[in-house]
Length: 328
Image 1 (cartoon, helix red, strand yellow):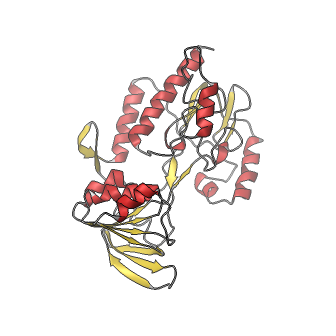
Image 2 (cartoon, one colour):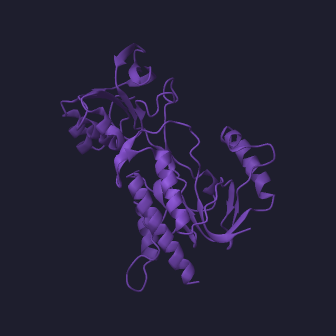
Image 3 (cartoon, helix red, strand yellow):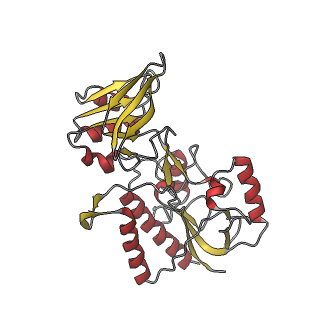
């Protein structure tokens, strides 16, 4: 059993291809898995103790904190993901009845968030080959090409506008008869000559060969369908943070994001106010509602969802955790 700062993360289990793209420090671009190997080599060289596993249960009620990283006999991570909430709760109860695997004096939560998908045919098959969840990341690949954005909120507006800088035309699909985005964002999209907004329209399926070639659209009022030739499809219907096992351990917002002293909302502001030190600065900004538990990345971030911002928060939380431990 070990006791140290323990990072909690979830493994990439989708098996979906990653888009090749340039990244700071890699002038010729690099595949995501190769980049992660480089990161691991560097961390190992600096003496990091890296262990792979999936946290299945935690207990933050007292220090040292307890973490379980095993499944009940005969259960795997893939099977666990397919259980109903009731079945998952029963399995977690079984897990907690067994000895815990790790003890830690401080914990950093960095499980990330997953983009919401529609669950339609072609969506998984063409992910990374024309289907994306980040126009800020992938818009440059659609220079002089056409794309669809699905969604009606501010995120969908931002994705649409990011694409218009490169794409020849963008079609925005909105399920209802109006946009949910702010008035300013609506005006920018509706007045862009490169954008066509289709209200009361959903995406039925995505077709292609090596890459996306077309998509079937369905009118929610008349149920009429049409096939639209297209080069790319961008899902902009929100994110789901991977925080299910922490619901009763740390404070979460109404969407399941972990609240810290730097969260962008009223609760985060209040947490920061209560944590002001004698210098008038917020002590340990990345700390959650539990002393000694910190959080970073997309599990906290409700606005940016970029690798660079997640990495920066990871650095911040590591520094906060180290300084907090030093004082004890």
